[in-house]
Length: 101
Image 1 (cartoon, rainbow, N blue to C red):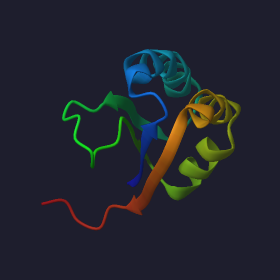
Image 2 (image 1 turned 45 degrees about the vertical axis):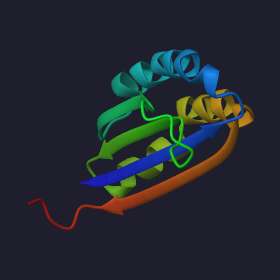
Image 3 (image 1 turned 135 degrees about the vertical axis):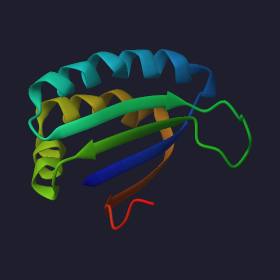
Image 4 (image 1 turned 90 degrees about the vertical axis):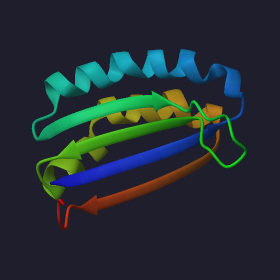
């Protein structure tokens, strides 16, 4: 299993719910159009701490190849155009599951 997690700090934290709802439409299309995409979700931070990000994207793929397909897909580019101009920071981690305990 290959996993991709992205967190964003937004320029305007008050936009987080609106932005997450807009992204949901794109994510729903991804679920139906991208082979090898097992799970994709977006969440809004509830801690409101200085250290937290405002949004998180969590996704699982059956393989690195499936992730690479997602990375180049038009829907992913749409998501980047939606969130990119509204963020002040982006953090990402991509990893292959080593063990499940």
